[in-house]
Length: 116
Length: 116
Image (cartoon, rainbow over all chains, first blue to last red; front, side, top):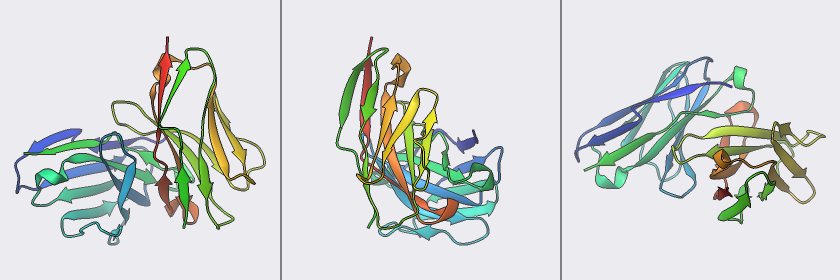
């Protein structure tokens, strides 16, 4: 199967700082990457859809100025949580899809963010 | 609007027995894709199996099979010969949109515990 990595796997930061999370497709070109947020024992909530070379499409209710997404290449997308607050603490997970993956989204291992 | 429903919050199964996890969906689109993912306590989302709406046969992948009943709009996951390592949360998902750029809509998830 296709491999997607995510870095860091966990991060603790102070309130007011910004945190960048990287999502990489390691063995295929990802035309589209997705960013999700998950609270404990709940389902995944899609935050935004990111296509290489274009602006991300955010889901309703997701602040695009707070959650900056950049998809600079066919193998890398980044999510930056700006001016993080404790309520931003969550599990963030990305997925990627490309021609090589057919219709299937492959997920990274996730990043656990804790804002103090 | 498209919707995925998993009505079993938690399930128990004895090791080596088979278990069925329920999933129903609702869509007016004749072309759609259905997915099952496994999420162990580590948080990663592992792709298990895919069923396309036009596929004539039920999908199978090793010990996983998808019981696709189109008229009933159900896509239940069957795990045969359960193993302790199968203990995890399982999500049913449907692709919303065409091709491989469509976003996934997830069900609420079912927590499976395999008893020794």
